Amino acid sequence: MRQLTALDQQFLALEDSRHVGHVGGLAILDPSTAPGGELALSSLQSLIAERLHTVPPLRWRLAEVPFDLDYDYWIDDPDFDIDFHVRELGLAPPGTEAQLSEQVARIFARPLDRARPLWELYLIHGLPDGRVAVMTKIHHAMIDGMSGAEIMGVLYDLDRTGRQMEPSPALVPAPARAPGELEMLMHGMAGLPRYPLRMFGSVRRALPDIAEVPSLAGIPGVRLAGRVAGTTQRLLGRRSRVIGDTGLVPPRTSFNGRVSAHRRFVFGQLSLAEIKQIKGAWGCTVNDVVVSICAGAVRRWLLTHDELPDEPLVAQIPVSVRTPEQRGTFGNRILLMTAPLFTNEADPVRRLALTHDALALMKERHQALPANLLQDANQFIPPAVFSRAARLSLAISSSKRGRPSWNLVISNVPGPQVPIYLAGARLEANFPLSVITDGMGLNITVMSYCGRMDFGIVADRDQMPDVADLIVHLQREVDVLRETPAVAVG
Image 1 (cartoon, rainbow, N blue to C red):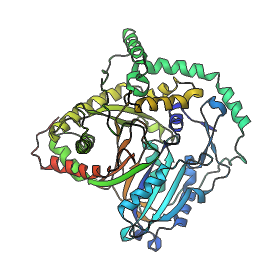
Image 2 (cartoon, rainbow, N blue to C red; image 1 turned 180 degrees about the vertical axis):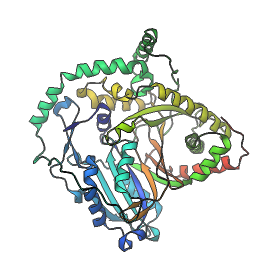
Image 3 (cartoon, one colour; image 1 turned 135 degrees about the vertical axis):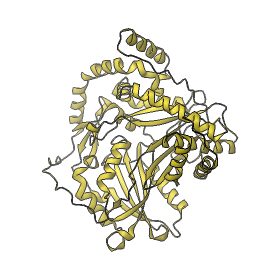
Image 4 (cartoon, rainbow, N blue to C red; image 1 turned 90 degrees about the horizontal axis):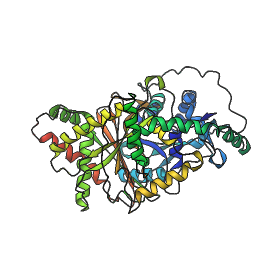
C-alpha cells in the first residue's frame, strides 16, 4: 500500500455534492493517420492495457481509513476492469463545438467512483471532418500537472506506427481482495502516534512562510504567528532574507461565490508564434504574455457585466516543485503562488509591463520558499477534521462576509512542440480541464502544443453562462499587443 500525502488528501477532502477534485483534458485527434483510418475503442483499450505497467496510478484504488484517523492509502485494484474505465459515445449531428463543450462539461461535473481507480477516458465520435475527441478525467489526488504530462508521454508516441514497449516486468500480483474496514482501522490506529511528530515538524518548517498559504493565513492570529516565526529564524541566522507579503486582497466578483454542481467548459487556440512575437517585441516571457492577455480578457468580461473592481484581481498560479529525481513518483508536488491580475489597468501595454514585474517578484518568492510548504501546511490539520476544515475554508471564502483566497486560477503548462500520436491518430489539440471551488469559480489553463496555445476554461454554469466570450477576448488582446509599436518592458 502507498499512503497519500496531506496535499494529495486535500483534493479528496474538498469533494462534496457540488465539488469534484479531478482534472483532465480534451484531445482532438485526426484518425486518418491511424491503422485503417479510424480510432476504435478496442485500439485504445489495447494500447492502455499494454502500457499499464508503466503507469502504476491507473491501477490504484482508494482504501479509506475509517473515522479519518489517518490519511488514506492507494492499493492495487484486485478487480481492475479496463472496460469500465475506457468508454465511447457519439455526438448527435451536426457535432458542433458547442455540443462537444456541453457534453464534456456534463461528464466532467460527475464525480469519479471511489470504489474503482480514479480515472476515466471517453472516446467521442461525431465531430466535423471525421475528427474524434478523447476526454480524460483523473483525480488530482493522484497527479499534478507535471506527473500528468508524464502519463501523457507514456500513452502518446512520436510516430504514428507506435513504439516497442519494454516487456512488463514481473509484477507483484494484485491482492485477491481489497483490505476490509477492520484492516484499514488498524492501519489508521497505527498512524495515530506519528501525527504529533508530523505536525510539530511541519509547523516548525511552514509557519514562517504561512502568508503564502491564503487558505490558512486568513485564520485569525496565524499570519502574525508566521511573522514572529520568520523574524525569529532570521535573528537565529536560519534564513538570510525575506520576500515581502504580497498584501493582495482579492475583490469579490460574480465568479467568487458559492458554486453549483454544474460546469461550463469552453476551449480555443492561439498562435504560439504570435505570443512569441509579443514576447520578443516587449522584452518579456511567454508566461508574462499569457497572464497579461488573460487579465485583459477577464477585464473585458467584467466590463460587459458592469462589475470591474478598482483594484486588481488575485490569481492563483500553480508552480511545480518536482525535481528530476522525483520523476515517476506521481502525486502532488506543487506550490500555489499568488500574483496580481491587472484587470484594473486599461492600457494593454502598461498591463503587460505590470504583469512582467509582478511575475518576476512571484518567481523570486517561489525560489525563496521551501518546496514542501503546501505539504507541511496541510499537516497543521489533524486527519480527523481534514474534510471539515477544507469545506469550512471554502464556505468562508465564498460567503458574502468573507473574502476569497483567490479570484481565479491561471495555469500555463508546457507541452511538446512536435506532432504526437495516440494509437496512430495524430493529436491536433489538447485542451486542459481543471478544478473550480467555492470562492474561485473560474479556471483558465493553457497547454502549448505544436506551435499553438490550447486554452481550456472551466467555470460555474450559473456564475458565467457566457464564459465562451473569454475565448474571443483572448484573441483580441493578442491582436492589440501585436499591432502596438513596441518598446521593451524589461
